[in-house]
Length: 299
Length: 334
Image (cartoon, rainbow over all chains, first blue to last red):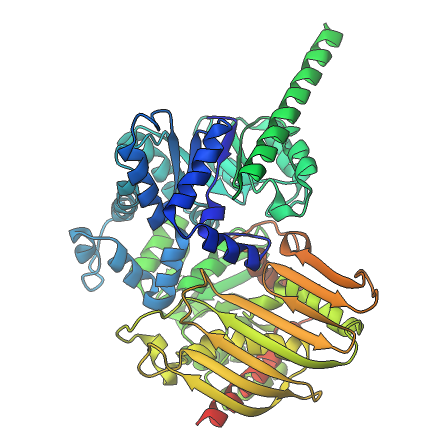
């Protein structure tokens, strides 16, 4: 994975710190061309991975990428599924089984809902596979080397102790899409334990970590210990904590954490992208030099 | 270890169950739902003890507390049964379909001396908690007006009916959506005492209102407005905003941000505009699902059972006030 991954929250009016900013962003990115312009701006700073939810509008972005194969030949998308609000709003209106009926086509459901008729446990896995395939349709022909389960679902399954479904996701992604499976979570300690128990080697985990401790479940110290002790491929998200910590301080903290492979961030303007990228590269160089100095002194 | 049973595993129930399932101080004794698909999933994958009959679940698993997350029309009978057996109850909002039922359950909970709480989760959101502190501190001066608003994309086109389209079952924007804002007004400023006028507007729904507008007078004499619309697709999800204005300043809060304007410095706030975000105001939790407030409210319920927290925030009695205001608004509109 690249050191810096470009995220999509800004495109879809997700802002953890302000409803007003989220409204401004939804106006700014009303047209898909505005999203493409920002992705292209990020590419000029070497950001060639777009990590995004399976939002309907991402399908349009994929069309542009497919239509210009030469220009985007090195471009990667890390899909994150599902786009939860689509389902949450549907569950509010239709209930859980109503939502599944609406979103999952095919005969399987006909069988499952036949007046409480018995069905096998494996059907929940089939259902998950159908939903994954439905979400992945829009990425056909696009390079998607890592495919993620969104935190709402990961965290829900952690709490429901449905570890086998999390593991099922991991294996299905590997088998069907020849890709790495990743998990997004706001509960790193619990997820890391589950994946360790299941003997998943070196899993990709994307989790909230920031100097303010926002969406860090437990404590920052606990997270730092896990990063040092457990073997997994860590992606840090929500590193700017919605802007509460000044960017320089926020990125110095994250770049200084042990074993973070990648940092995920999103920004709406070229200037913001540039300054974030420059801070990360500056602190990475600085930390690298410190390591070299330490090694020289130790040697 | 607190032994808790869950009754109703729909959208909110499943979310509560996951939070309880992740809490090392809680033993989930049983889960009850009428959907076989849901209970099969929970038995097979979550190893929960699942039931389709809540009385059987209580008889067999003997929980000391229960979380009730059923459609509102079932609340009264189920909660009454649980209270009668001396079980602590956390009930989803809205509390009951009407004031008479709510009053009876408030009295019963008091007689049985059990912990009772409802799921008006906004009160556990850091920005609204801080707003309440600001109001109580007096830095806003004499409060003379407020606006409580909530908008979201629940019903955005005509659709065939479900329970949400039946007024007799607690469907409709007033019970479901506006109740959150009414509850915040009651809590942060003062209980609603009088409704001077109200409009219940059907936009896409056939039988229930999709929007509620009302002019309110609170028991402390302050008046203000309520504006709620769940057919507004310009919002990605439910968005609730409270604006409170006094002689010395103004405060505006939603789930992500709190803005305070003061004429003079007061407490932690400078003169002029102050802005604070949820990222710094929220309480930290050990397990997060969709937002800290959902965990914080259940932590509070558990602490109240353990005798470590007062059973004051979101008590049944608070929810009764909200039910009263709902009836006032409805009767004024008819």
